[in-house]
Length: 352
Figure 1: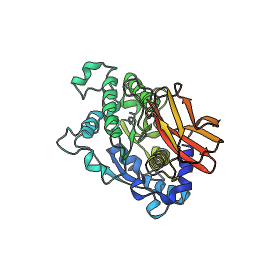
Figure 2: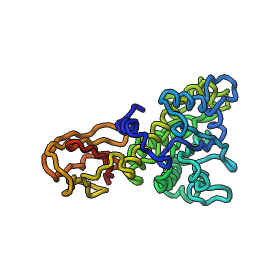
Figure 3: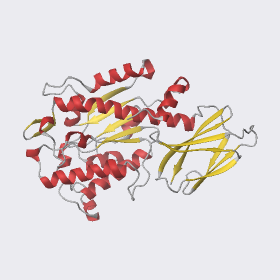
Figure 4: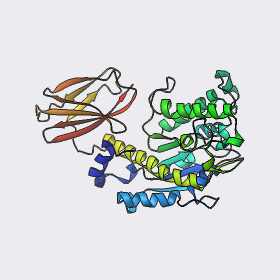
């Protein structure tokens, strides 16, 4: 992930963030596949681990003490680690643990399924939900939407959810691999982009870590260079060396971007309240209005960014109230940076 505008803003004001707004420590709840990626890999051939990569990340970013990123891991699973189990875990319908036991002590929570999830049986339909453990694409999407709704309702935490762990060629079929690939592509390219018609706008406090595509070829099967052995779909040391750095950079970059967003919208990092934006959420237009009690400078610049820091719009205004057409924007969270004289203000709005 490239450094975004949000992250650059964070660098400039990091000294005034409060501890409760830091999204830099957490827990990785995993099963055997996650344990192999965390490292050191049990096959003995890995040259790095996720803890080593976190140390490098802190060094590269000059993060020390309370500023450092940290994460612990836990072998989590009562009997298995399927999406149906994760669904129950997040909604509290279990006899063992639920997500609420982990939220208070971990600003970041990372979850995944294990490689049996890639043994998909069919595309499926709405009737599959009567049998939640049935491995259909329909059921998997249903599970993920429910999991994401719970995540969305906990903006005080940041979540990362992995796509499927793939199966090696001797442990799967062409059909299973294609179905798993289809589901994972939907998760990353449709759901995470806010384009799923049933779920809608993707929550700013969630990141989809596309583990599946990192280790597979065009057919959706794990590439031989990443498997532990034939009939063993655990990722080997080569896979650890590939994925561990990406795990750290992708997830913590996204968490720190969210940290910045929380700081900007809740703590008013520029200590100003000159402009109002309404309605919020909005569907067609937003209105930006200069406060009557503040001195107005007729040279106003407005920059609109998406949540990843990509600039979408830049314009200048000379009036105290003006409108921006947002009908062409996808549903989601956006950032507006407004400069007026010596005043700089950053605000968030949601496109419904």
